[in-house]
Amino acid sequence: MKSKLVLIVSAAIVGAMTHVARADDWDQRTVITFSAPVEIPGQVLLPGTYVFKLADSSSDRNIIEVFNKDESHLYGMFLAIPDYRIKPSDKPIITFDERPAGTPEAVKAWFYPGDNYGHDFVYPKPKAAALAKANNTPVPSMPEELTQNTTMPAKTMQEPHVVAMQTAPLKAQTPAQNEVEIAEVFAAVDAPQPAPAAPQLPATASDLPLIGMLGLLCLGGGLCLRLVRG
Image (cartoon, rainbow, N blue to C red; front, side, top):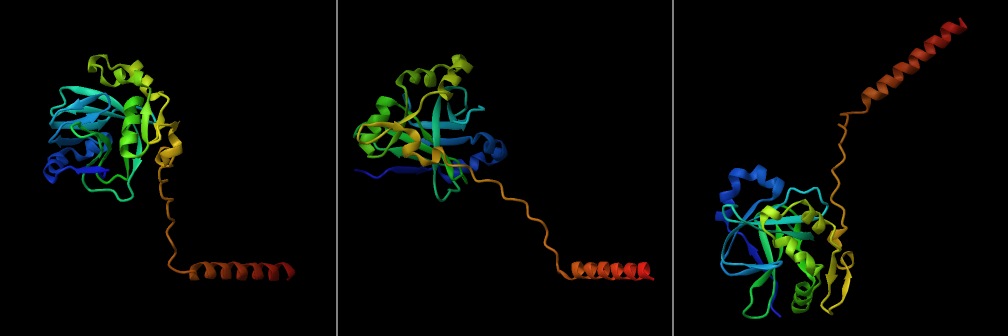
């Protein structure tokens, strides 16, 4: 079996995005050029340049939007689960699942530069089962009937369809063609995000001022006692 492919977006493309770096950090906008057809849930993208970014959603699940180069056409909105890399890259990364010879490779995950956590695409159950068997690794899945929600025209991509995806009962398909709870095989789904570092109080340069203050307090107490007794 072939090893899993990883695409690192070229430096030229990364450089083209630097003028909107701050905005991109919010929606993780990434420009990617594919030299061959690739599969995403429910459809195949032809060779060309595309824009991946996160939808503006309050959901605790990731929803990815895929546009054409000038963002005039939305190909769909796609569910994802968190994926994890020990060492983040300084460039965008796309990973692929292997497919049978003569068929487009399937996009597995997308990582934004500098992030340990990326986005693992959720495929309809039949496709997820096939990918799991072909790659000998679990694949996140959703009910097949939700496929139409991801690929419908942008003008009909309204809140009810987004909510349906957000509340979808996600599962995982295993290489043995079993369906299991997604958290059983994808640890990153329930992994807590790193907590902010606790603020550090400034350290004193020396303990001498504190000792001196305690000494003055003791001396003052002794003088008060003498005056009372006198």
